[in-house]
Image (cartoon, rainbow over all chains, first blue to last red; front, side, top):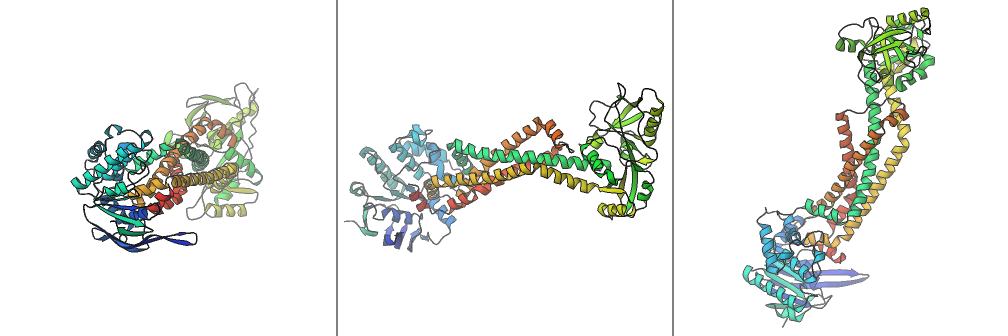
Length: 223
Length: 403
């Protein structure tokens, strides 16, 4: 499903060159549920962005279902993201001018598909994340947990095959964290969605089936 | 609820920062209102001059050399004015190379003497045998020659209508026709009658008691209207006329139009300069505001790209917002400009003191479309760079920078 080979990404900070991702190799099979554990600045977010086609690597390849995502055009990559990949972030990623249902439906605005009952599906997803009654609320009217739930519902609207989650439960209480992780596991088991979760939390990482550790841009399989 | 689209997101974004959006709308409104007013005034004057000269039907107007300024004032500002030259000049003009047809007119200014005489009106005597100003209209609208005591009036003399009675130099006349409005006071505010009738009026005034004698010299004409052959330019024929006949000035209609255009441009130059400055300011303002918008929304733009928005989608989103705001400003500006012109039309007409005719519905539609198009272009051009910048941002960088 996802095949990462010799992936390297460097940044220049003043006169220093920092290797955020250093010759990383990784294979994630369809329906896997993995985590990448690492401290802040270890390069895990950069790796996730490289895997999702959000930033171009200096060298190496990322293949999704055999397609080298950095060898295709920008439009093709956008379409691929829209069809197959979705992201969940640590921060509030909702558009403030759109209400909850509009935010959930947002990725469909860029979809090439016709309307395939997206609204009903969006309501189903809101039901699933437990904020159906907040359909018409705006982000500013929601708590942090509710905003994250809305963002998670949005991540599933295009029926993606891969979810790349960056600290998806960061700054949430334990109860909400447990609910979200339970939802991820359910989506993984029932729908076969592949999950790659990056986190600094060992507890959270321990809930995934396979764990990796990242330090100074180098990725290793965890014990 | 259907799938949401880019237009919907753009509309929502506009509402997000209402006052900032309003600032853009107001900037475009000011530009559109000024531009619409100025172009409408210019178009009104040009339309009027074209219509007036077409009504006159002459390519060239021959007048006494010393009366050039008077003739132009009479023609453009409609100031009643009289000047005369020898009638024999008509035949000389007829013989000039390139001249197709010639028709003379003689002017007589009315004088207030008796209670019911009308003053400061220009009576124009025309030659029914050769005339091409009144006769084509007469044969089309009246289908008969003018009878004794019958006159035709310009549409600007609003106090009168067909059937009205009017007295000049103690003689009663009946209005039997009103020419269509041209905006040129020379035609709109004048009274037309055949040469013979005018000469008879002058002759009778000399013998009437209690009536001021009309000062109309014998065997004289005021102007000789000339139509030229199609293969030769009026300007060339005018040169021939002035060369062949000493003491006359040949005024070319096209030159009158262009001189009015120049005159008007000088009058409106300051307004046009202000319009230009306003336009540049609006461009800068919209450009700066959209740069701010793009900077503020970096993370949002990155997130949209992560969701699968193509570069083109982001470009379209920014441009749609700019288009909606600029067209809204354009519509408001045209409405305000139109209301201003309508409210002050009398003042504009009198202060410009040049021919002025409200444009036709078709011309007005063109002007409205032109102003709306320019408003649209203003918004789109100003937002172009920020839109391209936003489109080119790498999604990950945009998300990180927006944090």
